[in-house]
Amino acid sequence: CPAHLAIQMRDGRDVQDVLMESVHLMVRGSLSGTILELGRMGMPLVALETFLWQQDYAHLWPDEGTLLSTIQVLAEASMEERARKLMIIMSNTISMDSNNSNPILSRFEALIRGLVFSRRLHEALYVKEEVESHGFTLTQNSYAGLILLASRLNREHVVKSLIKEMGGFPELNLGLEQVTSVMAACRKARMYEVVPSLFMWWKSAGFLPNTIMFEITVTSLSSMGKHRDALAMYWEMEEIGCCLDLLVYKAFFTACLELHDSTKALKLFSRMEDSQ
Image (cartoon, rainbow, N blue to C red; front, top):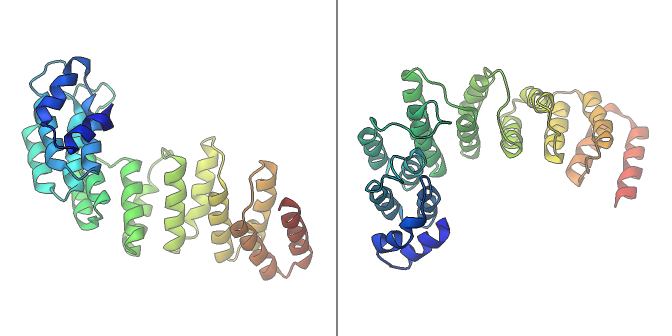
């Protein structure tokens, strides 16, 4: 168990003693989770020691997963220089991960994940430029991480720039939470026109939107003055059985007010009372 090993190290036991007790049970990739756990516990140097220890065992090394975890943990702890040195030292190490077609990009993205975690947007954007100088393009997951951080730091111009770049991807390859968060970032940056596009992008990929997605889309449509389009989404929500919360009802009532449509407002109020 990754957490169990990390807890023993946190409690003061010798790192090598802890690892030696379980080495016969380990397979390639086993220590990736332990390294991440050590990072969460604020023990990046112990994580690095764990990574270095495994290199003496042929059944554990080389392993791309533990390398990526270590780079990420060091960057999270504001030890970017050490992370970069590790990347240089391991530059000739061949990835054993058959699913990783581009280990160089993966290592840069691990560095970005760590920098995003530590809220170092400027440094993360610099790494993005490095990636592009090597002729690579960040994955959508990395773009999403950068967008969310820029939004939290109120760097609106960065959000807008990243969103425009992300629009160049032909297909959506993000999870529900990421898409919802990116939509919220677009609304915060007043890029209202992007929100319905992301909403349709998500649906066209064959996924059902959640309540938060609907609320963000309805309020964005209203902000663009498209109140009828906003109201039309009510019926779509009912059709798929999506639960309406107070924020969504508030958005619909606002649309009714702007359209001076008291009849629809009363119907919505009645349905809201029935659902309580």
